[in-house]
Length: 336
Image (cartoon, rainbow, N blue to C red; front, side, top):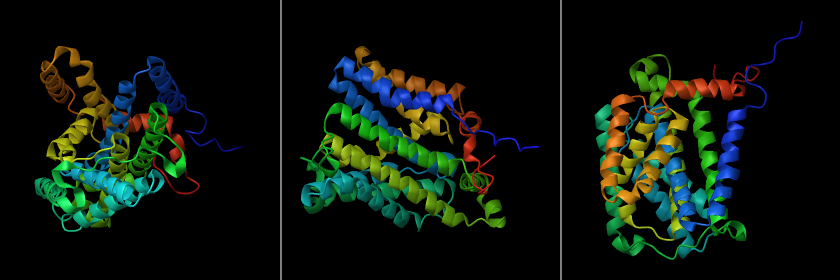
């Protein structure tokens, strides 16, 4: 009698539908609309989706409340800007190097703070984020201070011109998909289960043999690497970076995207980023009142949907149905 096929194998319609929408239908619709503004809005939404995904890994999965995430994002943006304008490197090098530098900065920040818990860790990350912001603002000889760095070349990796709206969108969409896969594989694996154990009770996890500090530093480094990629994309697609783009308010916005979308949920991070960026634009016709309306929507979401628009339980159930192949019993990898 033959053994039954492992569950989850075969073509799954939902991932294909999402890929078709992001890489075919949406760019086709934007091209037909012929609006560079809509393309720009889509690119910014994707960049913030990467930031929300990275924050999801730290806060939603590992349970660490970081209030300085925008500063790490700024480190990536300034790294790309300086490498591109002063050393003449193209995006094929500046983007991965920005992620690497941000990851290393994240490790340097994590080492002295990882034994802190709850609100003490949050306050520490807030202070470190403000230190990075003040450095960007006052180190004028290196960062040009409040003037910022301009004339950053557009996306031309390996000499391939991707500066057009459609090419830029597709390039950023590919990196966003990469970030989503990385976060999904980290969250939905034994590694992700270990992070959730740390989130629920780090002392119990430590007693069970998990290296809690190492897990926290690793997940912080991975998330900071992704934030650095987002910063580099911001620098190359806007052509200008300024310290004001990486303040505490940006960290709160990223955190709000994660909370509204659903803590611990990969789709929730993307949905939250899209909602909080696109809703103010959709309400632009009502003037400044739109900020109040966006705040009201966020308040109602938290009040009536405390687990977010697409919470962790729903996301796990979806992932198990759509990505069952993540469980590889022959290799002992994955999750059930």
